[in-house]
Length: 83
Image 1: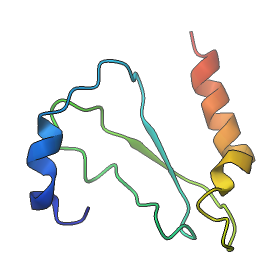
Image 2 (image 1 turned 45 degrees about the horizontal axis):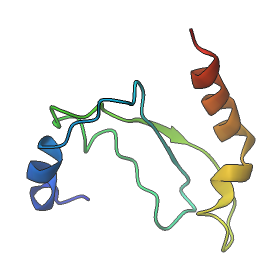
Image 3 (image 1 turned 90 degrees about the horizontal axis):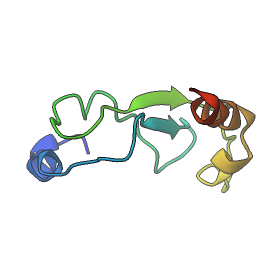
Image 4 (image 1 turned 120 degrees about the vertical axis):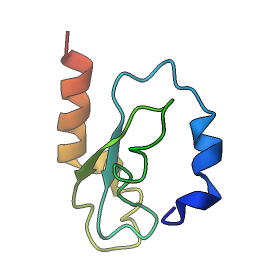
């Protein structure tokens, strides 16, 4: 992800007609998650994600802990209840 020359050209060809807002939830404890906002600022056809740091705990479940995280649930509820 950090070496955008490996993927940026392919992402610029993508179109996302559905998503109004892209929230990228990530936890510093999650070995797979990564802040994306800065990486996607130059992708013309995709919405730039908004990075939302949350704490999913330090365990083997840090990557799946988002589904049990109240901060994630609140952010999703805000989007779903917006007019």
